[in-house]
Length: 269
Image (cartoon, rainbow, N blue to C red; front, side, top):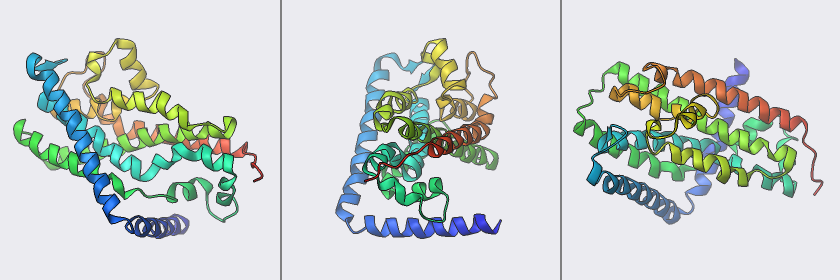
């Protein structure tokens, strides 16, 4: 228990140092937030234009789609803060700078994770919170304590699923010394799937995103519970398993990463 507490204290010390370094460039920080909010707003406008004529997409209306999208953006914001730099692990391995994470008396995974804390993801939080407020009013969502607790669990599960995939992708670098390209091949398409309800995709895609790369638990299944939407091919209660799925998926990703680490050979530079 004491070791866990020590790691938590160390993590916040490292994070504090990283935040102070990023705040040295405040204008860039502010512009990044503005850019993120503008980019996600553009996607929301695209959804509105798409539904202007047809009104619904897979029996989801515009406000329900916005809620689905905002839920994915919120968990992705936390994922960027905690895990986004994992996609660049191959650069550290090729340059030989990864060795410094092995010569210090702390867990290399923890050390690498704490190396960077990207507060620029505040743009995702601002967009998500504004959309949640707007959509909650439009859809008359009553946020009782149980529903808020469920939303919190859904966000945590979404963070762990997306973070777990980033960890999986980074682990490839231990075998191939290349990993970032897999981000664009796997992570980027998977995230784009979450912009819309899985019900519009073929059945095989729905099953893959439920049981192989569980991105359905990032927003679709939990949003269906909150909005009381049907989930064809799946039980209506599947969204309640989101935190458990996230934990299991991340634990598996962590062990794959540590397995890769055991096979790591220094570049010697």
